Image (cartoon, rainbow, N blue to C red; front, top):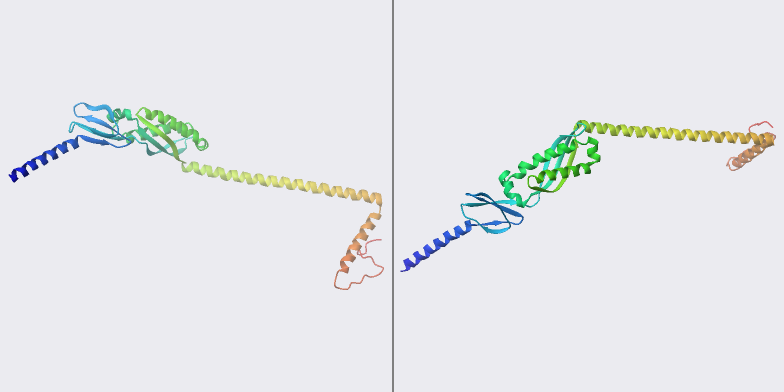
Length: 272
């Protein structure tokens, strides 16, 4: 009797296990930010896009393909040429995600690795097209304009493949060795030109100062001549007395005793 009970329990457990396995295989989960496309072995890819949550399918007949619909970053490096034939190394950073409603078409025409197949090719195409419109110097001075044109053209191009670009930005922009050497040489030449201009301006200022000083000396000489013509020798005698007074004051402050010979001029025998 007990053996029959255990046998019944065993059969019931086996049945429950089989039923649980069948139910488990008929369920699948779609995580947050993801979408699912159902592949049917008899009808192919279904047009219905399954949202987040737990869903049923027919085991063995149907298979879910899960897509991440959140924005993801990707860096695409490109080497191209500018309008003046300079080599330009550009790295473009893209935030992309698929259009959820177009996932069946994306899977059918491109595949699960749509980003690997689409983004590098269209990014290279757009960058080559846009960069070729600008000179190397304009790529630096008008970088915002270049980035905006790349973003507009690339967004429009990606939309044809069912992709949304949330952000497109130029993160790296360098030029070839030859252009870098030319830029450095130009900067050195500009510095030399600024230095030469400073030297010229300094010489001009010194010239003006010399002219002003000469004009001042000329004016002083003219004033002295006029004074002599007006006052005669009286001006010279006044200057002699002022000089003698100053010399006597300086000698009086000396610690040594100084004798002033009588009857001789202190101003080194200047004519009377």
